[in-house]
Image (cartoon, rainbow over all chains, first blue to last red):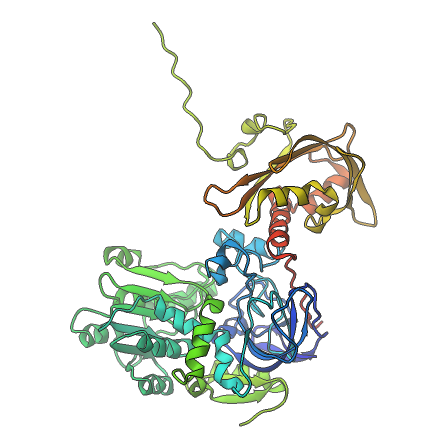
Length: 396
Length: 191
């Protein structure tokens, strides 16, 4: 089959690789009809996540048609259309039973679990196409993918519902949703969202859906801020305005009740600490550039909540721990428990209460994927989401 | 009248977590500890009844399904078994083990027979999780790190940190018992 493979920093190629096979009884093979490039794929593209190996198939946002089902899965049927969660979860362990699917204790193979156990104290969960820290599973920017525990993850999509309406159930829609859920939003509250990429925009949409009175969106790309405004958010362009000053004034001196860091590492910034981060990252003193998160913590109101869906992988310094403690902030973070939120979000989509298609700016064939990565990286203002069509059916 | 102060009790951490396990290992039940042995201890919680886990483990021929460094275990009789690990260059190492304690649903302990190339002893214990989360499975092992080619093999298998292999084996045991399969990426990739 054809698949997008990683070969090094800013070097991804479409190669011919062996077709995936059923390995375990609960596996299924999916013929992929739509797959997207995620903002977090850019961390792989920039090689800021370790343990990638040349030849790894990337991609963790995908959907398609079931073409083969292992003998241990009695739920899925060949021919069904499914969206696949990026988190691989067994459904049987302590964490899955608590619906903390992104903490599944079984999906990361024993051999690849060592490094994250060493780094984080406990091993990470398996995920598609996202380095060997999360298992080294082949991703979905390909014609086919093997889906382990396919009786737990994939959600069946009714016939007649277009791919693009439901594709983002695989990651970014539940991620934006969980980011807002983690804010514990009360009526009449103000939520500030850093980063108007796909997750940030979905977090804005979700914050309103969960009862936020106002949402303030922060970015520096005019087009992305415009999308945020079209969803009802007020905006701050951090290149034009001092973010904390603006937030203080826009909230009558109280500050936002909840703040979402939808940027993660590699945040842009124009202040001294962000420059120092880049210098230190360049000399390997710290791994994560966290300028954005510092600003989030400083800007949040006393007793407020900070929600971090943005991806971080390593350690950082100059973390404003004093501001966090003295203001009594609550912080919630984590990879998304996609399987937990998918059914409700699918219902909202089918009921016409949630639309995610506005995000898609570019549609390409799988063969054009390397160009898609380059554009997504270099033209973040206008390239909001790239959807790839491995079956060759591209509607521009 | 002199009153001797009692030695303060040690903390509640298990011996394998002790900073100098040598001091502790000799006191561990079912372990034929000798000075210089490597001590390995590791626990995992598995959401299955302890009788089921015990029964699977007690059939030693099942062990290679999750202990990937073990090539084959051949059961000789009720208490004796023959173990084989693969070595580089098509060689292998074998030894014979005898069960020294067998408490159905609770514990299995074993010890290598006299003259084994890899002198080892150990136990696996199955206890109900006090929090009701299933069964806490604890493996405790002591082995004499051999020198020479066999030593190099053992070092390779155990990645210089003896806990790693036990940790991986227990992860696979948990995967197999909870999900019915051992997680594997089996990723197609380009060359």
